Amino acid sequence: MFTLATWNINSVRLREGLVIRLLQEEAPDVLCLQECKSPVELIPREGFAALGYHHMVARGQKGYNGVAILSKLPLEEVAGHDFASLGHARHVAARLPNGVVIHNCYVPAGGDIPDRTQNEKFGQKLDYLTEMRDHFRDSLPQRSILVGDLNIAPREDDVWNHKQLLKIVSHTPIEVEHFNAVMEAGDWVDVTRQDIPEGRLYSWWSYRSPDWDAGDKGRRLDHVWATKDIAASAHGSRILRPVRGWEQGSDHVPVFASFDL
Image 1 (cartoon, rainbow, N blue to C red):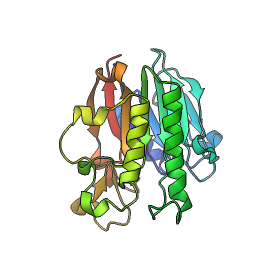
Image 2: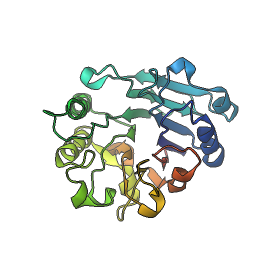
Image 3: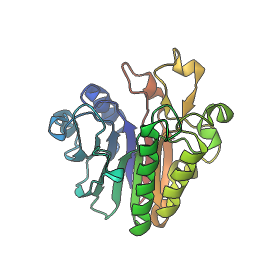
Image 4: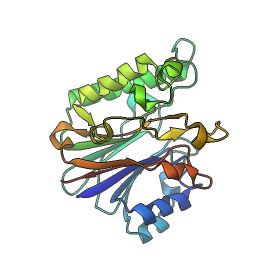
């Protein structure tokens, strides 16, 4: 068995201490980070290595985007795709010793206006998802896990108010349609909802909210998927809501799942 976590850290250098705290308290075998906002060579590694996380694969850029996989288990880097040719560090993939490939993804947020004619960033988001769909359709993954900040809350109970958010970027019908197309193309299973099929689940609360906890206007933007051939081995999914309250924390919280493989 191994346990995996995904977390949009919103600057790994600024929040190195929070990553170390999570590793100390929860000790996942693999931690996937998004929005690292650092060139790879400047990602702090000594503190992680001291806790047993000696392996890392990453894609980085200065002050923006960036994805990294930290692991106690050996990693073999297998890919780093620039979907939609944006020149962004948003994807990296690595293979574990058991042959399982982990894809760590950071889908573009898409700006504020859900109309590609008025908002270039929204068009880039849809194009990114389309290329993800085509990639997994053309090379159907097996024994794979996909995690990350996918910046879409697909279900009605993945947001605090479905009707109010239908025209808000991250929950619009066209985004959900693209999200589902990526899932179907890769034969992916939503592991979190496989384990927790009912009820509201959130992994993100806006910094703009004066009291995120009491207001609880969250969205489930962070996901753990597995291909159907290994999805039945997944269990123990959980979202660490209290982490949102850590001092100077990210607006996202870690999502966990374990796999018997």
